[in-house]
Amino acid sequence: MKTYSRQAGAVLRQLRTARKLTLQQAARGFSISVAALSRKERGIDSITRHDIRRAIHAYILSPAETSKLWTAAGMLPDAPAPKPAPVDVQSFAGPLLNNLLLPAFVIDSLGYVQAWNQAVETLWQFSRHPTPPLHILERLFDPSTRDVLGESWPRAIAGFIEDFYRTTLALSGSPEYGCMIRTLEQRYGEEFVGVWNEAGTRVAGADQDCTLDMDGVRVIYRNAQGEILFLVVQSIFRLSIPYRLLIHVPFGPENHRRYETLFAAMEPQRVYFAE
Image (cartoon, rainbow, N blue to C red; front, side, top):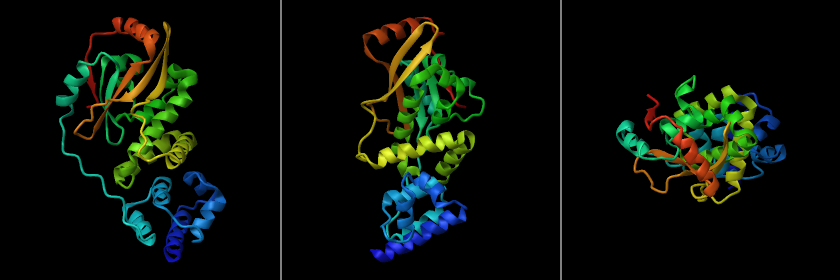
């Protein structure tokens, strides 16, 4: 075991120095102390599977670098996610969303928004996003979203990112995933990196089987007519294709009443698609 610890620690140090990162900078990406990361790099402390996953996230490792780190640690890599079969999004999402009166949208396995209904368009104006494709995390950083959510923005974005981090761990070694994380980091800098790393720390300290499907993420929508508290939850009906259906459910009778008033003033129901 010590041999593997030394080998993996040496590779971990090489990956850090190749990126010209100090221990202090790298430790922030791992959400651990500088001393703890130093012990791992020197082979004093063992490197866990979660450490390797965090390295994939923090250093945005290439497939070759990822394989080298897994091998040095004496571990089998995480099983690659199966490639999804082509799906006609309009065929399945169109009828589904058109019959949902609550705000609802569909995202793919990487978090890109593929379709949404009129209620979501009324609340969040997804169609106005200036740089498609629209990623659900990117939309949360938009200034207009911050304005609408107000004081609930930090809690809402923390919940969404934690849920996203947990549900996409299996994809973390794919080039598409690395490209998506780099794009978000380039656009939102230290603010995104900080929230992302905090989410990773919470996931690491929680039961890996725990999800937010039942509890939902609380979002307070505000406009001139008042505010509505929603729980954004994943549908209890699991899709057999690589997409997730997320629904805004008004929390309690009063918020249901406010949403009914808002819904009555909306444009006629229609479905929007990313392409």
